[in-house]
Image (cartoon, rainbow over all chains, first blue to last red; front, side, top):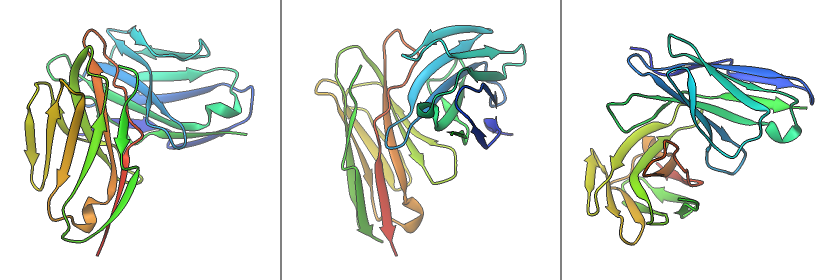
Length: 112
Length: 112
């Protein structure tokens, strides 16, 4: 049983560009959350998707948007990239029947 | 829940030593407390989820306790092994919210 998978593993972009990160949840999970981990910090909540809708959002600007597909996979889109968007982006999946979010290995984004 | 603090930030112990870390969080609106172990280049691994004051959980040589009234949790590792080397993250979640608020973690290095 595959756990949470994310693609790509690494990405380099330049300021002003747009990026799309992808996440496939663990089998049986219907909820996907995205977190950003900047250097020296703990992961920070970006948003959560459930039933193809954004259910809750953290303190991130509208440049960060997402999508959830009918198969529960999800994308995180970041527009107009800033240097400060350089970070590890983690995806976590969960289901309504248990409390725990299960994390993928992350996508490391570098903005030059 | 806004501010989660973990201490120490890092520590080195000898193989066979026992150690413990602290996670402090505001006790208002508390719902659950999650502990994760995160090895370099891997996905964060869920260790425990605790909800009730006085909860104690154990997984092999690792155990955790929870005090929701004063807002802290302890993680203990008995007889540390080199494979325990990782960053240990705690994340409380609040009632009526789906996001986890992560601390910055405790980086443990177990020396053989």
